[in-house]
Length: 305
Image 1 (cartoon, rainbow, N blue to C red):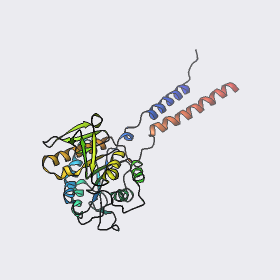
Image 2: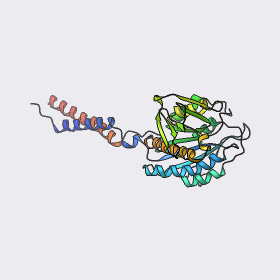
Image 3: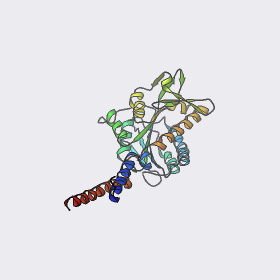
Image 4: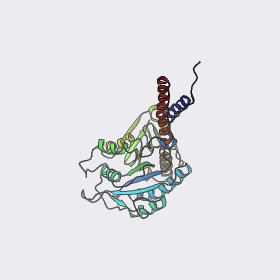
């Protein structure tokens, strides 16, 4: 019977370590434990109600994220929708800079204007993607809020280009827009690629598998093509802001569903920058090479001798 030397055993262990480390992803590579949440908000004259909602909603969302183990979150605010096409998207200071806490974000929403009328949501998204520093370790999440379809301000942008910007950075988009979702005749609060959410009349909501019925999407102008499709394709969700505007239990249902789905997204969302292979994996691979070389050296020495 052939006896396996200590070095050969060492090499075998190293191989096993490397295989296990490569095949089983590190925990921090599967989901982020902190989030960068960016809002891209229409500043036209009809949006004051949504501006107020964002401030209170975001503090509740942050509390829910912390309870789910996603902590140290930061929030940013981009405004868009000026009087004319030359009015460009811009930053709103949150706290003392581009990012702040949920409480600081809530205060910052008070600075949103309501005097615009030319809204290019794609331009707002593009600006937010390229003019802020996002943390590589954080889940990157974006909320677009507008009651208009797209007014083309930046003709260089395309649907494919904006979507690529989102997917290449693991950014999930949620669009709160002037669009309706009807499932088997019933109005829905919002939809993901697989589920729809319906107000239950008491401030809660029910979830429905979209493949089990018929979904019809309507809305203002080209909103579906501009924003609903974009949000769903990014892995996010689209929401009917008219239900939020209706107030009462329906608005409560909207906010409850929105926060629940945002938390569900973020707790499983990978960070915007995928981590490099773990140190243990690299060590295992290195040990394979070193041990293998030593085994070959000893065998060669034995043959020569």
